[in-house]
Image 1 (cartoon, rainbow, N blue to C red):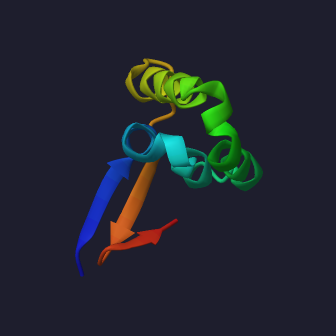
Image 2: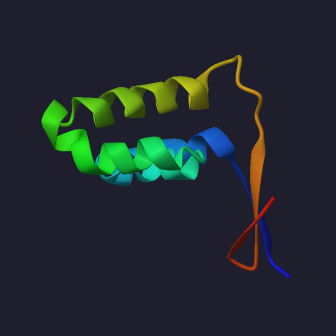
Length: 80
């Protein structure tokens, strides 16, 4: 059994950087409704919504006040 632990905030930061324009970062945070809105209406803000979410994710990932919660992957699958 292969186990890998990743910092939750860093995981969301990477998702926001790569797929933020599609709302993937909001889906990863469990914010399904906002993720759908971002997917449909991000073009209205000319991508500024994605940029702001990316900056927020960076601040949370590298701040001294984060809770350092981890995400565990077992055999490539997400485990709570």
